[in-house]
Image (cartoon, rainbow, N blue to C red; front, side, top):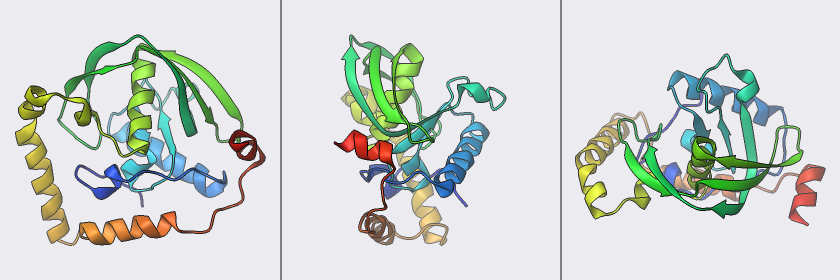
Length: 206
């Protein structure tokens, strides 16, 4: 059963591998992730936030489960253009209770595959753009706190320490394995034989 993992779970710093096959398992995982995202009142969720080191994320900037037409899945995303910049507040489902202003591109162009294996491209700005950039960062093991300067980081220091204490306590109780075991599990996933890519994915890699 999937669950959203909190800082400093090692999966959050683990670079993800490309998705090479779109199948029913992936579709079922996506549906579970949407359920978790809505339950947590979030607008986006990356695969490694549920301890799966694969390059895909989901989003619905309305955060409303009834708004199914606003649900989007980005598989093997690439941000190909960025325009201007703007600073605004961000939070993260894996860093509950932490918020800070982060500067990001105001407008972007992104390419990705959907659940049908089709390559699509879209332009995004404002909140839509910010959420895509935030989730794409997750796939590279990057968190929004990495953008903060010394003063902003210091302001969050106590909350970060609280999250780390909670996670270490969960490990001590057996709720999570120790870091080394988690990393070994992630490494094992990365060394699995590559699955046959869907035709669209092959075209994207050409």
